[in-house]
Image (tube, rainbow, N blue to C red; front, side, top):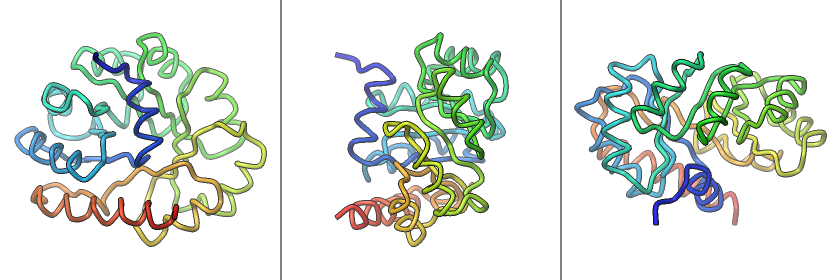
Amino acid sequence: MTMTPHAKFTAAVAAVPLVAILRGLPPTDAIEVGRALVAQGLSVIEVPLNSPQPLTSIEALAAALRDALVGAGTVLTAQQVREVHAAGGQLIVSPNFNAEVVHAAVGLGLVCLPGVMTPSEAFAALAEGASGLKLFPAEIITPAAVKALRAVLPGDALLLPVGGITPASMDAYRAAGASGFGLGSALYRPGMAAADVARRAAMFVQAWRRDGA
């Protein structure tokens, strides 16, 4: 039976809650890189819309990796949400909180992770139905700030720091209450071979499992 987007997301959060951000991914590399990630246990894949032909990559990944949660990042408008959905995407990630974007995603049954930095943005996003919160940019949202947010937000709110995350930096954030992470240039850069992406993915997965031991 085909899993819903939210069922895929729930399973990923329970297993390895790491979002692979493939900024700059060309469509010609999409399936090979996607399969390399899934083989290492990363089943949530985001192609930012400022990548080359992002909807083509999303369509290819969604068709090839049916058990993975594939979607778009840098989603700024409700129209873009609809375009991602039409391409087969099931995940909407934004650098900011835009109520119209969240409404469009929720209405289509998609997983939605808006970007927030402050408690006001976080509470507003959750009130609109966000599936979780992208804490962005993590370079200026320290583990101490995550701990402070965790103290006031609902206990089941998913907090995912994004921005400059490395295997070495995960432990402090996780101890502060992070639920998972978005992985950008430390995981993937345009032109990187799938084998190198797989190696980096394995390092992140090992760090997650080690930190949780």
